[in-house]
Length: 366
Image 1: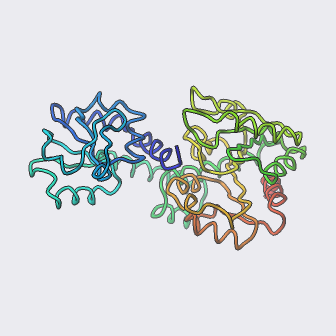
Image 2: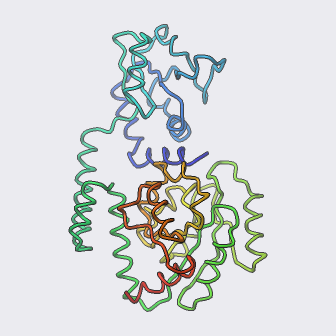
Image 3: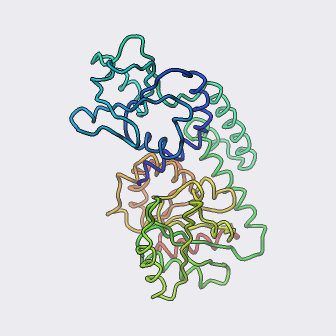
C-alpha cells in the first residue's frame, strides 16, 4: 500500500462515497454495470465498500487486460475492452481520473454500442459542490475574523482548499491559547520511518527543556496496511532504547488509529515525515487541537516524486510549519511540494534542531 492508495481512501471518505453509491443504486437499478479501469482508485473502492450491494456489477474492463491472461480482479471477471460489445451491459462506470480520455478511448475504438451509458464512477452532485462552496465561504469569514489578514484571506479564496484554510485558522486559535496558558507545552513525536539520529537529537533537546512535557516517541508502521511489519517496528523501538529514548508502538491494528496520541492531547505534534499517514492522525484532523510541525533534514536525497504528489500536498498544506536546514533547501523543497506561497516552510540560520527548539520556545513570547 502506498500514499496514492491512502489518498484515494481519504478522498472517498471526504466525499461520503457511500451516499454516492446510494444515488447510483437508484439511478441504475436493474441495469447491468461494467467498471472500466484498474488502479489505486478502484482498489480503494473495492477494498472499503461493498459495491455489489448497490450495483449489478458484471465485471471490470481495462486496457491492460488486452495482452494478458488475467481473468479475475478482486473477485470480479475482467474483460478485454474489445469484448465489451459482446457483454449484455447498459452502463459503464469509469474509475480512472481522466474520464474523458477513457470515454474517447472506448468510443473511438468502437468498443461500445451507441446506447451504452458511459459515466465516471464518482460524479460530485451540483448540490454537493454548492454545499462545499458555502462551507468554504463560511470558513473564509471565520478566518478573516480570527486572523484579521485581508490579503491572506483573498489568497485563500482563490488558491486554497477549505481543509487548508480550516487548518491554518485552527493554528491561529491554538497559538492564542498557548500564549494565554502558563502550563508547559505537551509535545508528541510520530516516527514512521527508520531510526534517525537527527530526529532522536531533536527529541532529546526538547525533552530536556523544563518548559515542555514530552511524551514517548510514537512508533508507526512505515506503511499502513493489513499485515504490519512488527519486526521492523521492534527494531526501531530497540534503536531508540539503545540511546535511552522512550518509544512505544502506538498503532492499533484493529481500529487503524493512534489511541495513545489522542489520549496524550498534545499541543504540538512533530512528524518524522508525511508519508504513510492516515486520516486519524493527518495534519488536518490534528490541527483542531495541536500545532503540526515537521523537520526536513536532507533535501538533496529526498524522494521528490513523492513530495510532489497530490497526497503529499494535501497533507503539507495543512501543516503549521515545515523546517529545512538552509534558505536554498527551503526554496527547493517549497518548489517541489508546491508550497512556495503558503508561508509554511521555514529555515533556520542556526542548526535546524536548535532553530526548531527556539521557534517553539518563542511561541509564548511573540
